[in-house]
Image 1 (cartoon, helix red, strand yellow):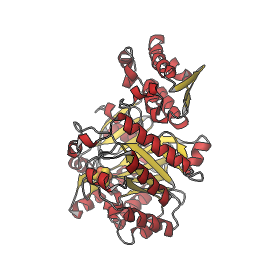
Image 2 (cartoon, helix red, strand yellow; image 1 turned 90 degrees about the vertical axis):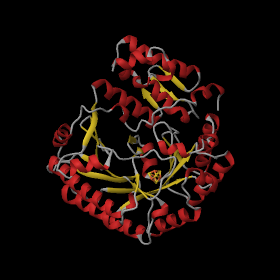
Image 3 (cartoon, rainbow, N blue to C red; image 1 turned 180 degrees about the vertical axis):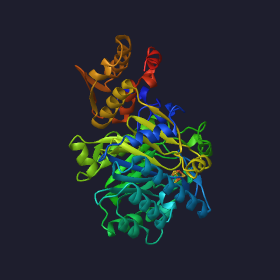
Image 4 (tube, helix red, strand yellow; image 1 turned 135 degrees about the horizontal axis):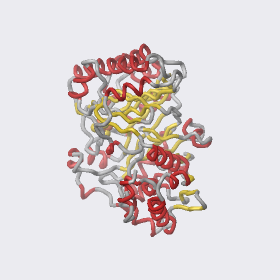
Length: 451
Ligand code: SF4
């Protein structure tokens, strides 16, 4: 890595799975506003549906998700009933409009729910929103909770993509994050998935975890490559103990420093590319014939709440506590706690608690950031034109610094990520993002006020 890039390693850049991030949502968006937007959905509008399952069997200390450890399955059944009610409410608001193109179960741990209860959720979707043979179904699975016969039954329901939370195979790292799952467990899950004919298996890996070393991570990556998943997402662990009390259980002294973190990410990139995976955006990898790689090749790669995707739907409808929807340029997030969520849905009301309606300027910024992250290149003319000259100059000042340091190439209005700089892609996105008052530019904060 270039010496000039090291100063950017400590910056906390947003993941930009939405723009602006959920931190900027407020109470201005009500359940009524959200319902009204749903009612404006076009008849055949492709819909991406997200179902949040907030339950887990145990707590991973690094966790940043909206989840709760649950030992009483009866409580999960109440949640399934609430999901079905919420789906019915959305169906009423849509009144026949929209077509489910994709359904993604995330969490928490979706396979905390038994398959028959996942099926009840799917039945509600089919009855209220409609399913077609081409609707794609994806689910995140905790390998420790896969029951005998689960994979067969999920495949029979039509789940064509299954994603395993692997994180790291090293026993010492697993102990340090309180997520112990033997390699053989993951190997057996992958074997089951291949046996039922699945061709889209995804692994999530994390770097920046306690006790990770280059050698331990190399072994994790070798074991990953040996199991040959179709996609691999390599996320950086964000240590935020002030906001996430469970992360205080992690021994801070065993966390890798910024430089080792970067070297771990670079090692993953190098080994996965050497193993034949195509780099997708800045943190996903896919086999050449995987739909994600095809989408990247043909310029159809998108970024949504789950990360990089080949799902072209502009509209996302989220169900469950804390789930976020994006409908008609409006973000709407459900109440985060189960109590608040039930209080709304069980009384027949949408559970929206906060959100944001994108301003015309925010749409331009969102588009510039999304394009840059998906293609490593963007024409910044529309972005600069959206701001007064003084503020546009501020964005240019940020980009100037990055160009001087060789992070980007800037030719006319086209900004391109430099080869090998994918680890800094989100830092470049920050430079395009006035909310982030990027990379220490003094005018940045003033610019943030101008949105
Ligand atoms: S399984 Fe996932 S959601 Fe549950 S505690 Fe672990 S990281 Fe968090």
